[in-house]
Image 1 (cartoon, rainbow, N blue to C red):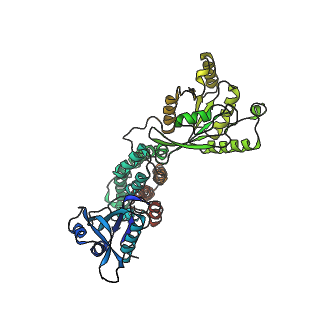
Image 2 (cartoon, rainbow, N blue to C red):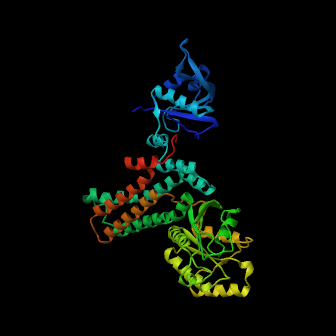
Image 3 (spheres, helix red, strand yellow):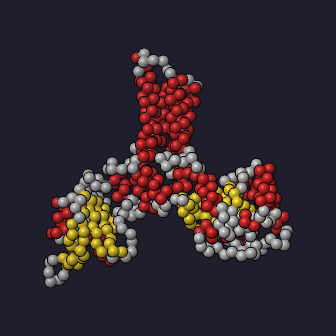
Length: 476
């Protein structure tokens, strides 16, 4: 397989400019073949953008041996190892025609390169020591970022803050492992008695530190992947009106007739930097409401309600919208059923502009009697209380204790490795408490370190690398 790779690194489709990247040992010879003399100056002036022509070697006129000009181009050459991949790299920018880009790649591959696989440039950067695995993953996250929070989390990881955190977690364990293995390798050297008490103290300290970082995954996952929020409640509670007010547009049909929303409606919002998929769902009913002529449902609406329960079970948070002008006790019974499916629930009382202070106080007492969090009050009609409700929703999702400087665990791969490292440290603690031979203690510490090293990529297997880089876009 050719060791030189090439791919378009700009977006597909028509644009002002398209850029092709080449990386590998044949990069210079390919440039020598397809560049005009002025563009070849880039080979002798690294990192200097040089203007010239690209030749189409595959389209030579019958009357001349000279190749035709494909396009004007700006060429930049990055000699290895001082390049993104650590190899010789060139980036060629031409006019953004899909046809011109295709012909350029045809010429490059005819000269010995091959089309890069998804993520192969970043994979080479990792294999050549230009990035560790967490930084390579951050590149993909940064490309996909849709909000400021996602971009900031990816930038933090790309700058090596997560790598440093993992290294710092491992250093005390490496020191301890050296001490334990000294007892194993040199038992005759009287370097001291087996100090299980101090070993347990050190292991437990590392385990607690690892657990504290693992605890950030619940918030970090939501920042990276986005949160799933469901607006639930009885028919005609104002769920569609609330969705429309949050979006600032008429996304869902609103009617005074109960049961207008028969299927779930999904919309995407940025909640102060947090990407949220928010669902407006069909109104929920129990047997008591079903018996009421105002809420009698048909077969199609019952299918919509079934979908509502599915979304409730899968959501990161439920906004339960209570209608104070309907039977509150029945709605609280439905809320209890919702919480059995999903405990992460934010209780919001709608139509607060239409109810008296006495009724509000009565609802608060009913809620308090059920040991539920105090409800929020808003009006989906005029947005009264909406800003506060959205702040509370974000805090419910992320927790209000997350500080900007916190390095968060954002991927399942990292969380699984940290979780396994904690389990192995627990095994090491157990070995110490039972007074087992130091070989058992050393084994569990060594395995926990291996889990930490896997996060950064020190012990990454081909399978792990394949799964990670296959998710990248082509050109990165």
